[in-house]
Image (cartoon, rainbow, N blue to C red; front, side, top):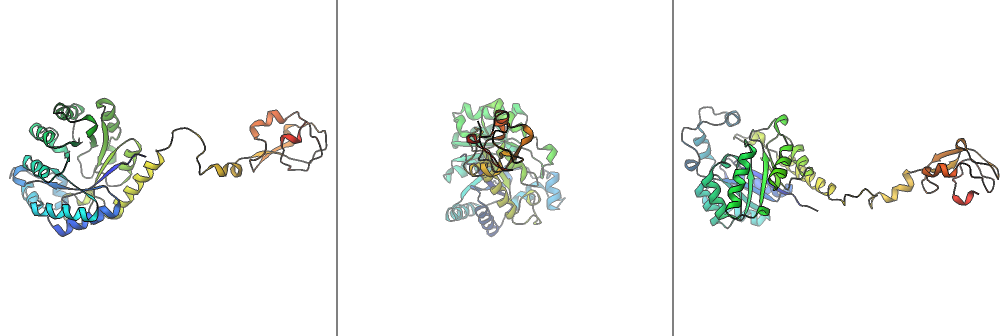
Length: 340
């Protein structure tokens, strides 16, 4: 059975507080996620000091006058924070993961021994960033929010040209709006990515619920990424578009159930669990009324009743016209030995 890699995206929902980050690790572990992912960046390497925030960031932080730089500066994780989180994840037996948003952060995550890297949607067209990632990391996950297919293909080619094995790359369909309106999800684009680029695909979800990532797994996603928080009412840019712990657990459970449901042989045949119900649920040919020895059976003599351990109703045409070899009571379940 295929195991979908589920990435619980803590992101910056720790609000710059290590204790909160630890609680996020606990919640991701309790929910059954494979990895808990944070974000590694230095604000001055990521955004200019005058860059404005996105509309959703203004709406969710309720600080219209604050610049994106000021917001991100509050949300940075220090090197000691990273060390503490990696140790805590190891203790809790859940994988630590982080997305680097600048060149130095790529190098830093590599120095920590991390071998998997993720291209965030905003860096998809950042050629020097992509080339450096390709040199440093063996396994690549690419998010594609806001992208045209040609841009996705161009980014993929950077990694392939650098020698990254195609089998070590997963491309995530994504929509960069928080939360994403359902009518903008366009989940079939994930299938187009797989077919046109001949690549393993997944889905990074920013909708408000859990049904779309579960549907994505049913369609073939091998990686699911989803933001989560301890409390959607907390102040911060991503909390309102994140799942709370119970919702995250429900999503993971739903995905695991779908994995099991689509893992069958593909042959249409009775399953092991339902075979016992065949006799109970199906019907057999019975006599509708009492008939004497030698009676020639007609359709009006017959009724189809449970259980299904006698002659199948599909054999009705082969029963009509046969004669009884002895007297039979009404509702007798016919067998071939009753007929001559």
